[in-house]
Image (tube, rainbow, N blue to C red; front, side):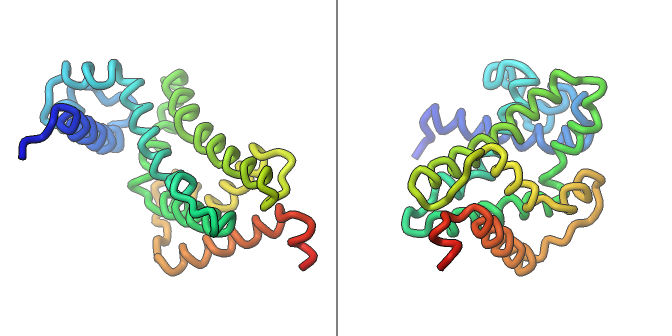
Length: 208
């Protein structure tokens, strides 16, 4: 069965984003649209038609990563709240930080921030800032439901993210090897979720 035009557009967009990820990793933020187009086997105009400009392309790449990072929030099971989602979210965040290749875009953004501050700002706003806001929204909803007790969800989201990144983030930024052992990541995610919940659990939960 032939693909519908919408499916073709999505497949082509994903191919462009995959190509952009590889080229930016290799050449940094200064990578040209021409190089990305060659890697994706499309024309420059196709990239402009899909994304408009290089900044928008990079923002779309970051948005895709954020969507993957925060998938546990969207897929949350009400019966498992909040521990199930906190654990799944921690596991996803730790897995990303433990994957040096997956962390490449943030690394090249740090490297190119001085020369391209506007683009670095766009990456920060589309990535870490949006991720923190989505986690904060989840924490606020859990507080509203009485399952957490958080006065400042944005601050708590930043604390949670920091617990997940730890030293791994610095190693990934430096391009150093980071342990990606699945059992270790699972254990660490469970520990992060348990300790975070203990810190922000409703008073009744802390005393039981």
